Image (tube, one colour):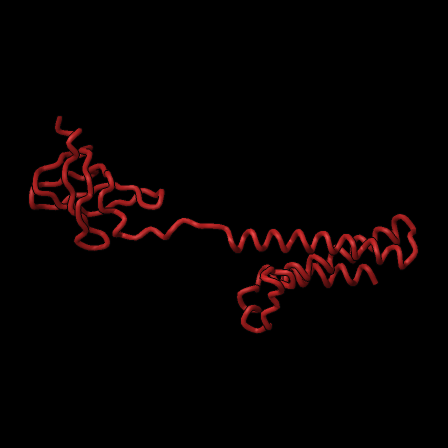
Length: 169
């Protein structure tokens, strides 16, 4: 009985982790007291831990059925609670805002393809921690390696830049 319970719990846990978005729309909301107490991962962890601990107590130690069941339920409760806390922490963890093109204005960049006055070139700027190469225009000639500041957006991939004062001093 305990082995079957463990297998069912592990299957529920794996299905819940892999298909939670699909199951979310099919199953009723089981949010109890503002926690993820009855979520798929919690139920799967509870059943799996109950089955494994009960089986270990009964087959490994020779505990009688009721003692093995009690120990399994206690273990399942602890692991289910821990899983609920982990799920809650992951679901409610803060994230950075999604980078937008408008975030480029005011950022420093470096010219990677020379910009001629009134013409176009390319600059490398950091957006969301990643280097992004953009087409750039400027009011004056800017050589490769020049430090510039993005002053305006013409499109999502084209910016207007000005030379940084430090570069020309």
